[in-house]
Length: 449
Ligand SMILES: Nc1nc2c(ncn2[C@@H]2O[C@H](COP(=O)(O)OP(=O)(O)OP(=O)(O)O)[C@@H](O)[C@H]2O)c(=O)[nH]1
Ligand SMILES: [Mg+2]
Image 1: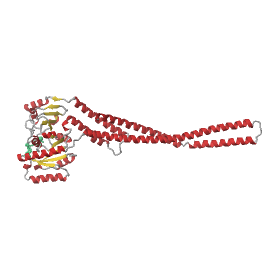
Image 2: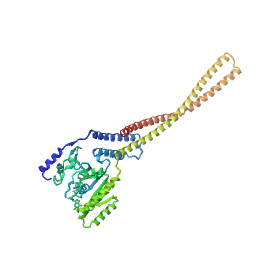
Image 3: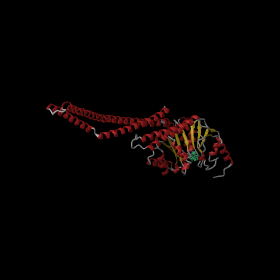
Image 4: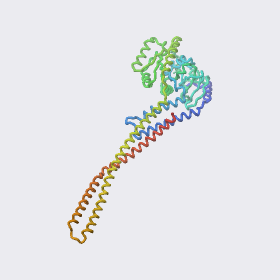
């Protein structure tokens, strides 16, 4: 690293001492809401998993990452960078020194520094606003007002080569009065470097882009590695290709068709190709073509709404739990009926048994009375004998009914009754648990509404 000169150091100190634009109370509260929402919603899914309400092939971790973490991070991002909310966000990507900043200067009549060497150190958001207003956000999340003079410290020409700005600062925001920024936001990136650390600002900018303008230095063509990077990272984004340094190529047509062929072979869909070069003529044509193309892309852009995404996730879980609760209640009611039937059968048998037992006792006492009244001290007469025989017959039938009633008490059914009762308790508990999760979801929904 070159010696740090006084000029550089003074500018850096002045930049670091710039006025801090503190977050408003609303912003802080909104960020806290996002963190709480992420926690609450994740917990609702975990609790749903615990009660087995999710299907067997439901994979919780990837679902949470895609449908809870990603949209909520996007919400936080929109709170921090409101200009990302409804506009088409376009990232200028590629290697360093391929003409990204030059292209942006042409599109927006900007004067962002360009240089023959690696120049852009941080991602820069070009947003609609007062021409020339700039701010810089530190790694710790503080926003500093950035004066034009101080911003020179970041330039390769006026600053210090390889000073690790990206370890102190996160990104720059520059306001611009161009009409185009009413519809879209640009992110100028430092480009992909030799290592991950150098590429980090570019990769994190990529995450918030709806569309990518990928720059290819035509004489260098496109490498396999770049094609792999595009395939892995393009996602659902629109891709535009700028073939820069076109007039530095001996055979532009051939170079262009090789690049198109390689992208085509890799099955990478390109929305539009543009050419950029050094001559005024090429640059004028480039500006007018790319501006009209991006304008129409912005017109057709359906802004991603993370709130709608989260709302649909809540609805999904709500419907799933409502259905689950319905099923659980149905199972409970079925068992309730079945245990009632088992209990009724048991009661009937028990009642018969008791009735017959009482009848037996009564007959026995009649037999005793008959003996006492009619047979005391007497020899057996035919009438008494008949009466006793009749009584003993009914005594026997009563005993038989008692035995049948006892037989009717099926002990397996009693075991079944016990099992079903405990299953009922289980379904009852599951229903309550589902209701609790549904209440939590409703409270989240109330905040949304
Ligand atoms: N001949 C020629 N020079 C170009 C072209 N595009 C950009 N340049 C020059 O190439 C150098 C690098 O251009 P930049 O716009 O700074 O490139 P960049 O991709 O933003 O570079 P980093 O910010 O370092 O990633 C500058 O000196 C530009 O003037 C082009 O199409 N043809
Ligand atoms: Mg640049």
